[in-house]
Image (cartoon, rainbow, N blue to C red; front, side, top):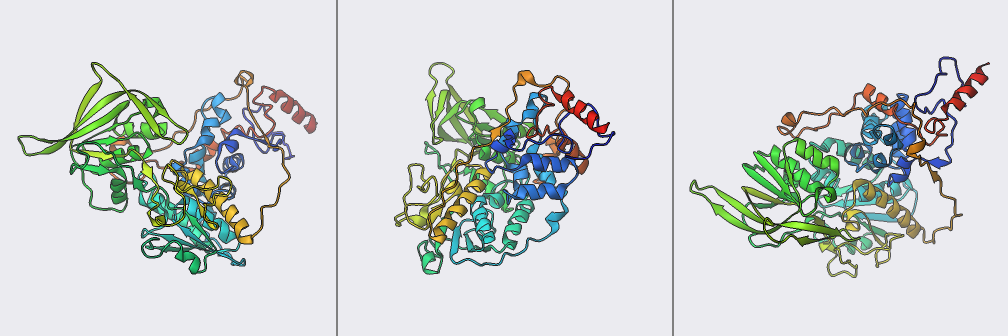
Amino acid sequence: MATISKTDVRPASQIHGEKCWPMVDKLSPCEKACPLGTDVPSYIMAIALGKFDEALAAIRQTNPFPSVCGRVCHQPCEIECNRALIDDPIAIRWLKRAAVDYSDSKKKRTAKVKLSKKGRVAVVGSGPAGLTAAYDLVKKGYGVTVFESADTPGGWLTNGIPDFILPAGVARADIQNIIDSGVDVRTGVKIGKDLSLFSLKDRGYTAILLATGAQKSTSLNLTGSNLKNILSALDILKKARMKGEVLLHGRVLVIGGGAVAMDAARTALRLGAQEVTTACLESRRKMPAWPWEIEAAEKEGVKVLTSLAPQKFSGLHNAGGARGILIDFKRVASTKTDAEGRVSWKLAEGPGSDLSLEADYVIIAIGQAADTAYAEGSPLLINKRGAFDVDPDTLETNVPGIFAAGDSVNIRGTVTESIAMGHKAAAAIEIFLKGTAPKAKNKQKEKEVIVIDPKLTSPWLARKARWGMPSLSPKDAVRTFSEAYLGFTREEAIEEARRCLNCRMCANCIYGRGQICYETAMRLLK
């Protein structure tokens, strides 16, 4: 137990790691919610104490992409944060970014691992799943080569997510840390064209991991969908990210309600569009984009229309010679999403069920599909969703020694879910390389998750609003591709981290039993 001084003793307004009784046989809800099982309380408490190096070290125990996830994680941890019972959840994602921003250790290059194990692994695709698996295997001593068809590694992280959300340099820093460990990344190599998939085994690779993601656009097969100014969201985002010649003007309509649709809408504003509207099948509550993504788009001026199903496109030509597109919609009465993420809908009928909009450009953002063309003609099984069919426990395909992970398997996955699959694939590949069955583990009792009854929370816990993230004004943000969110200052990060209840501890304060701790401390001082 930490030494207690008289200045330390006061009626606590919140739990603090250096002053409270530990109960670390339990899990905080944020840890349980994280796909990576990140030790959130430890890194938040480290930041609260100004120890950013320790915070980053805690994050990197499970996450090789701390800079990336500090910006684009879907933050399930915050949804479960117990602090929300008092005021607002802790800004866990933004604090992950702060841990990187203010850590001196980020400047140190990762030491190259000595390869000591037999067996070489080929990874096809350099997104978060592929690079995570490669990193894990190299740290275990295996030689790993990553083959990437693009000129830069990173998959969608570096070739699609807009710079104003995830600057390319930020993603490259995390990737370089992985490369420095000894992962051999070869860009500009397209499997299926430059090398055949099954020739990799002839080149000495004992195991293969397919992690090529879902970078193929889902088309919208309607009358008129081949009109000139109907564009793919993925193409627009890729060209904008690679600083390609993409200019838009006038009115832009984005069809889709997911993260890519919101990214495309915000990108369209930065490419010169005067007016941007999105239209999707789902109601606002059921939109697949995260609420903060929709809010960010609306703040910048994007108009969001819901419960609309496009029916056909028609070309327009006015007296001034300008060309446009007329989009006919039917209103949607209801939607239903199945277990595999496929959406079905019922159209409304009667007066008011039809709607038409005009636009100069239409951007299609209704989903992505895995690109499995390089596996055509092989015995690899593709499921109904167009993804690789794998064993759910090992991620191995029907071909021994060939595994798949990330969006090649879970098309609607998030970055952290892809990282988690990369860890899982690496563990399974190591077992395969060793040629042994996994050892039976003693079944351990799962740790209890700290669940707090809102009716029992202490009324005297100090309320302190969540620290707002500094950002460019919407007016300035749409004029540039510079990062819209500016990040916490060091002091802001510390103050936000100090809001953490550290509920993995005894939780006496939260339950209104803080007086017990105070009286105990006073007795110790006598």
